[in-house]
Length: 107
Image 1 (tube, one colour):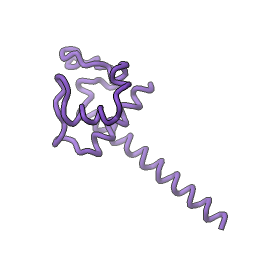
Image 2 (tube, one colour):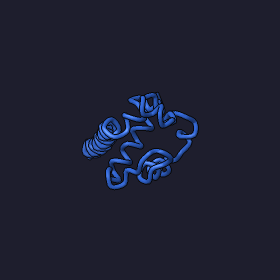
Image 3 (tube, rainbow, N blue to C red):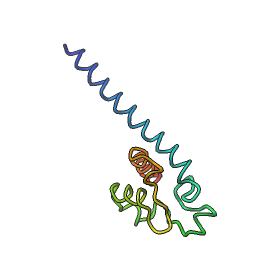
Image 4 (tube, rainbow, N blue to C red):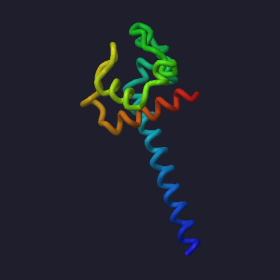
């Protein structure tokens, strides 16, 4: 009985870890294909397009303090010169990109 509970707990942790890892991987892939040209690989906005449009760093205090809900809304609806991605990206893709952005902010 005890071994069964341990195996169940291990399976749950493994499933959660695999799901989280997948979200980060797919978020990274989507970021690279849709966001990186303006926001740069590191989120700094240090690209020719980013500089010309004055794209802020994703690690700036203003962006870091935004909630995930706010970042999702900005991505879906656009903000400033950033175009809306509703209809271009699915809700799960946008959520995964926001999760990936949070990893960039920790670097």
